[in-house]
Length: 505
Image (cartoon, rainbow, N blue to C red; front, side, top):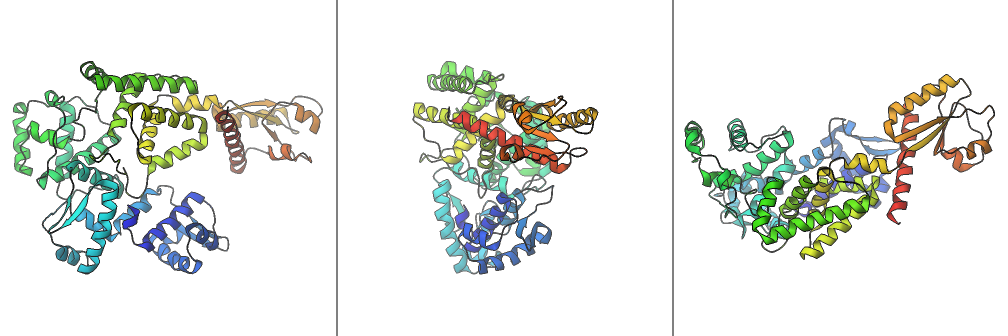
């Protein structure tokens, strides 16, 4: 939804993103060329950005400009800052709490003119309709859609991106009481929660709760979970507390509305639950069978086994349907300004292009078989799920890369060479193999004949052989941070070349 930002807000965001991804000093001219702006305008932007993010974060020198985030921060903070200070998104957030206000009243509260807000609402509606099949009605101002799920999905995406883990943004919900209620229900259903699960659960249930407060309900799409809801006659003290604190009645209907995002025929709490459903539903059975077949196919293609195959089948089944789809057949964006799943996949592709290519090819096969067409963001969601739920996948992918072999030559002592060897294995663990050169004489020709990927010496190497010079490093005493960084870079470059070769086999 970047298109609802003002033009100058979008440009400044693009500047920050370009600085972040470049991770180096950049001149104004280079930035201007890459974001299609002028140096004069960028100078003005830099003044404003340095006021917003401090001179320590946005640094300038004779070399240019660079972005240096504190070690405890990441790019997420930048996007939260943009959303926090955006008139458009502040207006949108107001609507979830009060659906009775007029344009005039909201314009007064947001300190803008009524005409400005009216124009902004038109711009917001274009973006919301395209991305979420949602609109803003103006008499009074509230969100409308053919499906309540669309509105809930949008707000879940927004609040997830707008607020940090330490914020409680739901100002009409008592945080402590709500968390206690969720923990009680999770315990009653014997559903274990870790930090990440609980964070998602709070967001995925708080938004439905806010919508329930405004009188908006969804049609429950499945009765398979009704028997899992505990008998609340045994928890009258809790029911009375909820009635007193919120005015809500703790019963099956309330719980179904609160957990509506999970209660549908295309979501399985466990593999056993999924298999049981497949026995009674030929459509589910076909989908489960094809998920299993394709995962086995991908496993064969990349020659890596799946130790938690049943769990992965369940997760892939869930995400392939949980990638939310509107009644119009569209896949709304699971983010507002920043797609972390896309960034994650692109980072993984740099390390393992062969695997990522094979994964997307397998997803293409699923789409053809099921007559489905996922959006780009939905595809990234699905591949992300595959990567994080495939047990031991990353270690196996690294093992496939093969060891990086270092040849160590010391003109000081054998013991010194061995000390370097120990330290390098400490820094690079199982990624490397090492060998100490033991011959009494040494020459460039002898070094070239000795098998190695990288040469480590304790003396300057005088050679006109460019390839040998570029793949060597001199460590005078013990490996410095710069030495370790250079070897790390050489290892990664070696991996990339090998992966690229595998990709075209």
